[in-house]
Amino acid sequence: MTVWQRRRFPNRTGMREKLPADYWGKGTQSRKSKEQWFKVNVNILMDRMMHNSTDVHILQWKHGCEIDQQPDGTLKFMKGIDQYSYDGDDFLAFDDATMQWVAPVDQALPTKRKWDGVQILNQYTKGYLEKECVDWLSKFMEYEEKEFSSADSPPKVYAFAKKAQIAGHVRLTCMATGFYPKDVVMHIKKNGVPLTKHDGVLSTGVLPNDDDTYQIRMSVQIPEADKETYECYVNHDTLKEPIVEKWDGKCCDCGSVVGGVIPAVIVIIGVLILVVLLVRYRRVIIGC
Image (tube, rainbow, N blue to C red; front, side):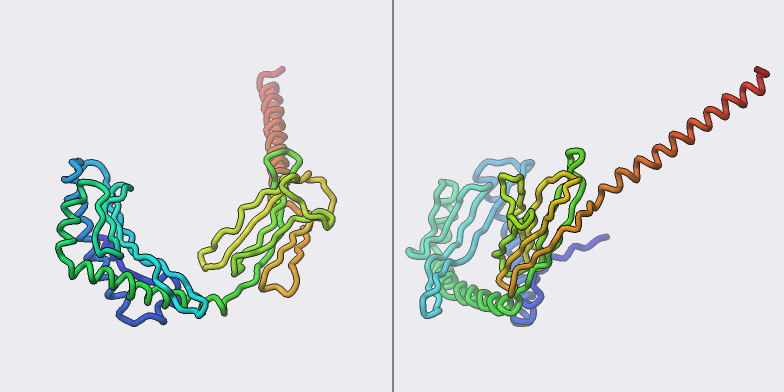
């Protein structure tokens, strides 16, 4: 029997050391309790909406706070968010200014009346959004700033070509990866001149890696026999001077086509020789 365990865990290794030892354990228990709460309330909402249990229905919870950083570095609370959606539509939302729940649909009114009837719960929700949520957000922002201020990473740059879909052409690719922060400048240059979209240059844009760094690729299709000078130009905040990686003129997989043709020709020749030998053998047996 396979046992699946749901746990709250940090997706960055540094977070485990920065937060209290019991933070993740308490968070796991809290999420498990919330999971049971969701199961019960999805069934209640299905009854109210007169939905059958054979279809898939989704209850979503959005919870957090918005802040504004002041010139002196302090954080100012702007807005609290505590809202629920059912099957993608707004169902219930907390107004922290009035300490009341807002019901945009009639089916949410029973829940609104019930929750508004417990003022101490609404006071707790308001206090959490305006104080505790801001404190946590401030901590996470501080952790992230410290983590990445010392983790600026320069790009690694590669230039390579692969066979293009059009015969006699290759797709030249420039790739920069492993860099942080996100902003980067990349060009494919031909004889020192940057190529543009009008020359057929395609770009992936800046994409995230799984280690909180970034990557970007640019490519252009060129004739396989092109003997011009191509290079990848990359500039980044971590570099004292731009990286210029020259393409060596080689194609990664172009040789595989030739390599595939030669064995095929050898096989065909071998078959023809075998057929000729069989025909001669039959003639000898028959006595022609």
